Length: 401
Image (cartoon, rainbow, N blue to C red):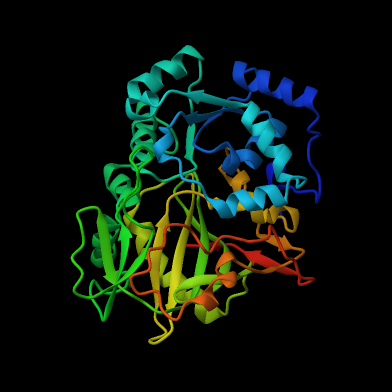
């Protein structure tokens, strides 16, 4: 197996997190004292990027992690995440988060909505990014990322077609239809109502998902399609390198009831036939989206009735669950490190333990016979426990599209 040192993983290895070292790292990163020629701008949650911050520190790569002061009425409490954090105060992810928080620059909300203010801010701290990565795919973050990518001529810049695809499910649907990618129909016996896009600033009045009768009239901010009884979901990590080449990486299988995931198998071994189905679905997107240096997660769904495999969601960012499931602690697969500059990919990733564990929905699914007209505001498919490993070993092969 070949690869640069940034992908060589030693199980359990981690830089010390004593307060003195954390403070020193904080000062270095804020003053831009690392001499590495490449710089990374991170927009969004320090919790999502915590492990990447650690990697940047170890590799001495300049980075600037920015969080925005959002209005209090837009901050939604996720009781499930809060419970996980309380139950796992001593877990390794917590000191990583504290370290990342020390290195985070909190900036006014206007920096998010006025790109010129953000440019001035970066100029004042003498920080010129070569790469930009985001932790969330809200309209405002994507607009800012798009502007900064073009302003600084970053490796990660993309065109307006990609921007609209990242932002709106309705635009994605048009691309799927044009490229022949299989998706649910626009109408059916029942409808699934989703928000067409997300906002960082405005209180989100549109629920995450809602099953409705087929005579439902959607609002302007909603996206609707046929309700599908999902047997299982495949979360497929897709890494796009600096040349624009696409690679299928880890695949997680989520078993569903009422079309909500309740059990995870990760990574999941795929038959040759299933891999070909996945490749056939994703390849047209590669041809349509000129993207470079990005880690995406595409969700595919298997219809229980027809057994068709279809595209469910395209997430133009890394999975936020990486900070909890932490694949780098039980394999050589460290997905966030792929966002470091000039990474050389190995031939495969070795897995010591396969994760098999229940998700939040497993504790609630028995209470419902049907979800018709039941609004879903939170993600019930997140992990309840951080990890529940087996003794199974495996390997993650890279599939280049």
